[in-house]
Image (cartoon, rainbow over all chains, first blue to last red):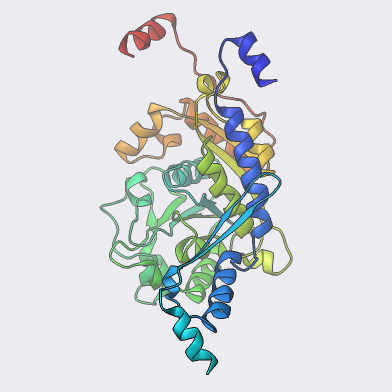
Length: 93
Length: 271
């Protein structure tokens, strides 16, 4: 449809893109209203679980979310310092 | 019965203060007794837009903290004797506002005025939440632009959950006021259309204020645009909006700028 308009009308403005982006974004944000901060919660719990076994720098636990239209991805990036095997071993004793 | 109206937006710079002054003056011109309150503590500007900046002695914080009486802080407009201003403090910050203090001031004003217009600061922090806290109705000022519409949506969510009315299970009457509207750009599809904005926000329209030199000119001289040039397009749009607030049914007009051929040619050359 947009392509057709473009062909017929010469050029089309960016307003339809703005409307579409807003509709997708707001549908998501309205769903989150009143909910706890999901990423913050995940980050804190992941940190707690991993810290039980490996010594971690809390700053080096990064949780990212990328929202797609149908599927979203959750990316968890944890930097484990070298020599943590020893701390695991120590923890086992 | 008095009506408390918050003028809010979330985003800054969309025209809350201009709209508060223009709507307040328009309601006063209709014979209503009106007070406009500046909630932007620390960054007050309503006094400047109303042309009362040299007459501020006491402010909202002084009244909230009991340092001054309400009557001492209220400033009467020099042009309309049924229009009053309650200025914000310029030296304090928003933490000086308390829920109880605001509640008492609003309750007192309700006994004295027909309309209490609360000019909210930008953002969603204390100043903004207290400005909307006791509102019966809200004007959500929105520009036809993605960030403004997103912030308006957030503010609408807060009006439906954080106000005293919402907490009692009652509704805050909400209206969208579209400002800085440029009909030529909307026609070319470069700007979100009125229909797009209303569909996304699912909130009724109060008025459409065109982007105009008259708005800037009015604030330059410290006069609400409805008083400064009542025949200008933005003033007429604000006057219509005020009549709708008062319950009149006024046909919605999409402001279209009429440019003469000469103007168009000049603009093209300038560009």
